[in-house]
Length: 79
Image 1 (cartoon, one colour):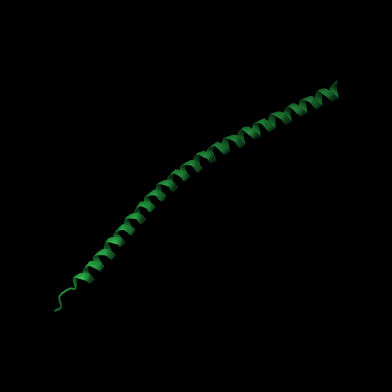
Image 2 (tube, helix red, strand yellow):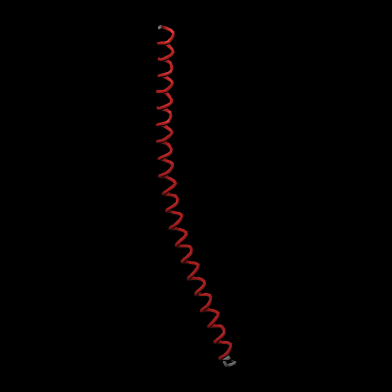
């Protein structure tokens, strides 16, 4: 059985420490992106709801304007 080379052992330890740091950074990135994704999905849901409300209000306004135009036309033809 051979005795481990201290230089090689130190090199392996440094590589493992570097990999651990990279893994920590990767996990931090995953956590940050997960939170960002959750926030963006929540914003998208809210904006979709607002858009649906605005489309409904726009349709109501369009219908009311069309009804007013029809009433004006009927008054014009009767008057």
